[in-house]
Amino acid sequence: MHMLWRAATGVARIGTILGGVAIALMMVHVSLDVFFRHVLNSPLPGTLTMVTYYYMIIATFVPLAHAEHKNAHISVEVVTEMMGARLRHHLQGWMYLATGAVLTLLAWRAWNEAVKAMTLGASQVQGSETIAVWPAYFALPFGAGLMALLLMLRFLAYLTGQMAHMERAEQ
Image (tube, rainbow, N blue to C red; front, side):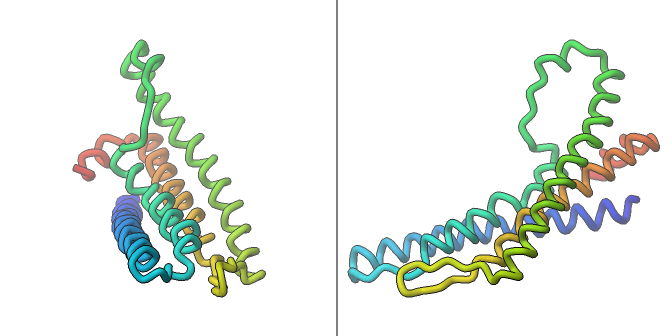
């Protein structure tokens, strides 16, 4: 389980780098589009499609698992703060399973949509350009699936009592 955890978190780190690269490319692309539009009176074709279907999707969904790995997702602990530490621990353990199940379902449905988009050759027409957008459909199942894997591994660590060991290994 530890080797799978290390491999999954390594892939999650790469996903975060890809998300950062997508943001940097988006900034450069939009800046160049503004420059070309206002200085040369000739905007870059496909900017809106690239930002909407590639940069934003990759920056949003691919790094999801890294946020889970770092416990960086937003949480509101109004009710759980009133619980004892043991009850909070067990509640958190079972929430890994529930959240992992929801994300598995999301990844599965998104995968089906991505395959359908690929089969259809989904594309967007912007101006005189036709841009294939189906590859971007795979970002959501990738990010959600990897996050679901991490959550399920955390749930298994909770069940087997290896949670403390896994948390120490993360630091």
